Length: 278
Image 1 (cartoon, rainbow, N blue to C red):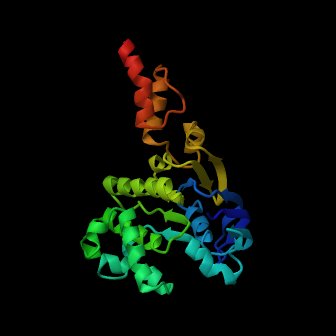
Image 2 (image 1 turned 90 degrees about the vertical axis):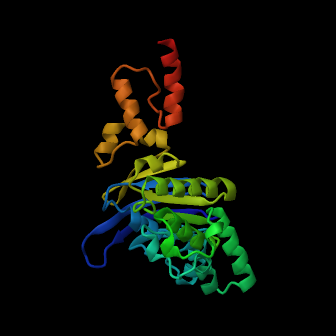
Image 3 (image 1 turned 180 degrees about the horizontal axis):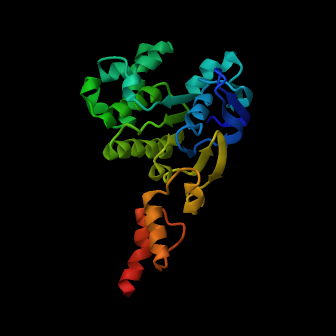
C-alpha cells in the first residue's frame, strides 16, 4: 500500500497573492484514516491537491510510494494510486447513468471492458449503491450522489482515497452515509483515507488528526490528544466536537468523567455508573 511522504513542502500562489503552504513535513501511513482540519484558507485543500500531483511544490517534495510528484513520468501512476473526491459531487458526475459514470475513469485508463464491468460492480457494492446502477444520477439525493462519486474513484482502484470536504454540501444524514463508507473502506479494504473537513465530529473517527493554520501544521496527534484542550483549538478558529464540548461543560460543573471522552459511547460509559450511584 502507498505511503505519502511530504518533506519541507512550500507552495506559493502563482499570482503572487502569498504563501499557501509553508515548510510542511508529514508522513501519511499506509492503512490509516487521517483527518485534516482547519478554518477556511488554512491550506487544507491545497495540501490535499499536492498528494496526487494536482498541484506541485514550489519547494520541498511530495512522494507517493517513492514516486516524486515533480517527475511528470510518474503523474499518471500517482493519480491511479491516489484518488480524490471533491466537495460537489455534481462536478464529478459526467454521464446520465450511474454505472456508466462509475466506469468512466477506468474506461479512460484503457481498462478492458470485462474488467470495467467487474470494477463497476465492486465499487457500487462497496458504497451500497448496487440497486441504483441503472438510475439517473440527477434523481439521487446528495448523499447518494457523493457515494456515486466515491464509487467512480474506487473503480480506478486507488490505494489512497482523499475526501476534500466531500461532506460539506450534505445534510447530517448524507454526511453520516459518507462516514460509514469511509470506515467500511478502511476496515474491509485497508484503504488509506485522508479526510479534509471543517466538521470536527467527523475527525473523531480518524486514527490521527492534523490541525492546519495559516498554511502550517500546528497540531498532529490522535483525536483524543488534539481535542483534549478546547481553548487551544479555539485559538485556531475551530470548535471542539459536540461531545467534547458537552464533556468539558460537565467537568466544569463538577462531574467526574474522563477528560479525553469524545464520543456518545464514551460519555455514556462514564455517566451511567454515576447515575446509578445517585
